[in-house]
Amino acid sequence: MRFPLSTLLALLPLAYTAPSSDITSASTLKALIKRVAEPAPVTPVAPLTTPGCVVQHFEAWIPMDSYKDTMLSRAYFNVTQMPPVPGWVSTCWKTTKKPLCDPNVWYPCTTYMHDQTVTNEQVMFRFGHGLSSVGIKRTWTYAGTTMTATATEAAEWNESVNPLVSNVTVSQYGKCYEKPNGWMFAWKSMTGLGPQQGV
Picture 1: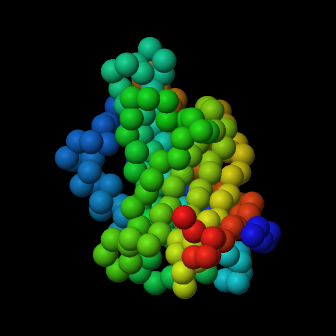
Picture 2: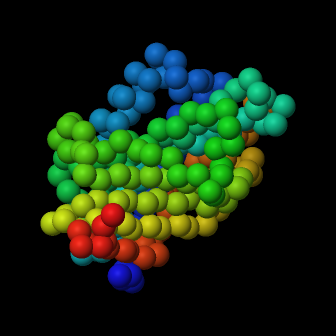
């Protein structure tokens, strides 16, 4: 069955813009773990009755073509539910030498409830070519029914030298994408597969 939903709000404030840092290094890992505990920026959100999610601490780094063989692309952010579910958070983290922006590839996140790994659900993300869009997918099981909700929205980027309007940091090494004011997302659909329909 397919159910239309209303709107999904996703706030994608970006940070951590050091162009040459490697997300796999110990110092970077410690910094990212520390950032997870930081409170999200105060931003107006949709009514609590609106189903969706909030994306926090988003960062995407993509090297220039001349460095793609020696530097890694990376993405990192956290996802929380809206309306809020206390203790629930999904951490999305990907470092790769392959193209990060491939609309045919979903990257898995790790979901926690009160710091314990959740096994009955999965959050995933994908990027359009050139980071032209961001997609979020959440699959979970409730009362024997597996539900999947997806959202994909276009991303607008500005490489202006004016820091008041720019949300992309450009260097000789690559680009780091920032959007401190966040994005509005909308669930495109929700599907449910009951146990009698399962494999």
